[in-house]
Image (cartoon, rainbow, N blue to C red; front, side, top):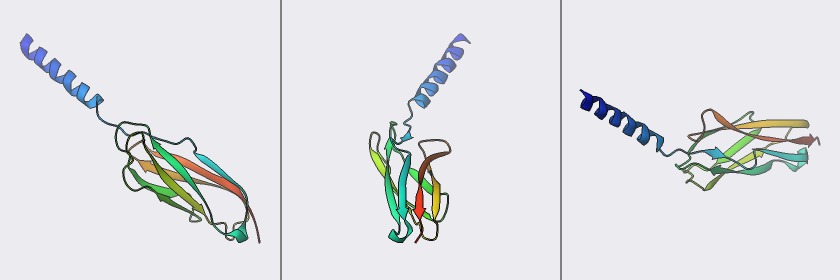
Length: 128
C-alpha cells in the first residue's frame, strides 16, 4: 500500500513539474502610447508603428487586433514572434472630418496574456 501511495505521489509531482516547464509567450512593449501631437486634417492619414516584444520562452502569436473605431486601421505581424524577438503593430489614423482632440485604443489579443494588451494613440486634429 505504501508503495502505491509513493508511486502516485511521484507521478503527481512529475506531472506538476512538466506543466511548470511549458513554454509560455509573454507580450510586452516599451511604448504603449503614442501622441501624434497636432496634425492637419488636410494632410491626410498618419501612422505609427509599435514594437511588440516576446519576453517569454515560447512563440508569441497575435491572433487579432481591434481598434476602438473605424477611423483607426491596424496592421500587425502575422507570423509567430520567437522568444526574445520583436514584431510590429502599425496603426493608421484617418483624421478626415474629425477635427478636435482624439484618443483611440487598440486591443491586441494573443497567447501572451489573458485578455487584451492595450495600445493607445492620441492627438489633436486641426480642421481644413
